[in-house]
Length: 306
Image 1: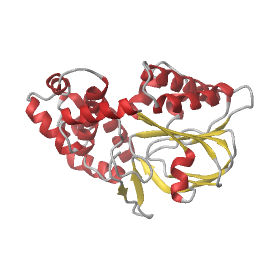
Image 2: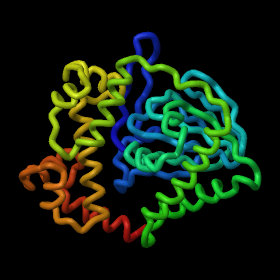
Image 3: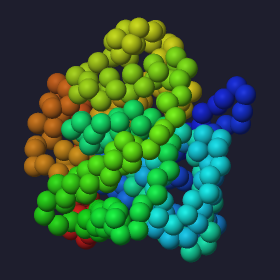
């Protein structure tokens, strides 16, 4: 999605922060979910995805066949076929796949994760804060395997009600995860330092108020810290300022409206808190590289070719 940045730890090396591993370009469509096969990215990197982090993204990696080694917050684990790993945002992680390993990687933006768990899936809400590995039982959990396969097909296509079916398939996967969490003993969520707690609160507030034109000072006030400290936390976590993260969320919302609705650019501008459509157009072009109209036309071409 965006150019990779780096976060710095006082006691350790720099950890790259990516939207997707190795990505430096914008996603072609503004979906809140990204699907790909393990082989598509890992074989480009000699089957090794080096240590990195993601901001604002939650990942599911389903190893359908083969084996792998996975590092999750400094702990190394062996993965076998039929296992599913949950990678929360800012979890330091990396993979080393045996050549020929195959499966699916599903990346979700947090607004979509919040929507999926809002229906009350029991322990899944707190469980998504820590990395975990689950094993699918042969035959009993075949529907989860099928959900990943069908999700990938729908993601790559442009059939009617695509979003609705993808959401339903993701809900199916999340229900299965919730059931696993309710039947196994899990270690309690590790306490985070206060700075990470503040940053998580900021991320949640951005999701609620990005279209209301809140200034960074107001976000900081709601959290109970200064704007300067909030910027320090944001740079430490993502390499970007608080304002850059707010703008990134607004741009994502604008893209979705331009691609998936027929609202005029003026109406999109107003819905996102801009009082002047001309200023919205300049804002969008500065961040995306093309005007809203050009982006809509380009996206329509991509969708037609899909």
